[in-house]
Length: 114
Length: 110
Image (cartoon, rainbow over all chains, first blue to last red; front, side):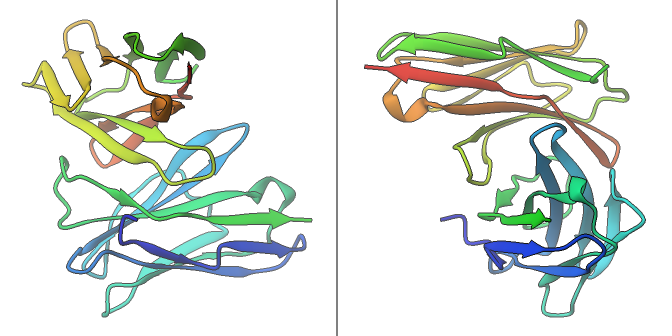
């Protein structure tokens, strides 16, 4: 158990809908990362937040957005969902935002868009 | 073409044997290289992190090497165990971005 929690574990929804995925980092960690893992594209980095501020951006679609709240939990919002958005979404956390920080991954949220 | 290429795609070895996984990258400017172990359906677990100035790093039976000149890294697993069966993923960071390899699927058989 990494200490990172993600909810929900599974989510089934329809195309065009909007969902919110939630992540609670390890106690004391200030940095949160979001990743998408699909069968055809593998793991992709989406976005990083550090202490409430956006720190780095990867391959995040405009339909997706994220934020980190004052209590350091983070939410990833996915809107206008498409079939191709079906994937495992991982959150990870690290103590700070340094480039060689160890990232601790949560168990993931499995999203299925029908 | 992916900027991080891993080989082999899959590998089967007998318990107790050693193996080496490869990662070649073209990502630039290089910041650091990470190796992760991922069990099916679970989050990746960090094995090693190396910066430009490091050419080897160990974590128990796992030893990673890095040649920044040739842009190659390897992960050597010693005395494999059944629990080593997993996907091993190489990740190269450039600036604030991260590029992932497709992974090597390792199966350790008794």
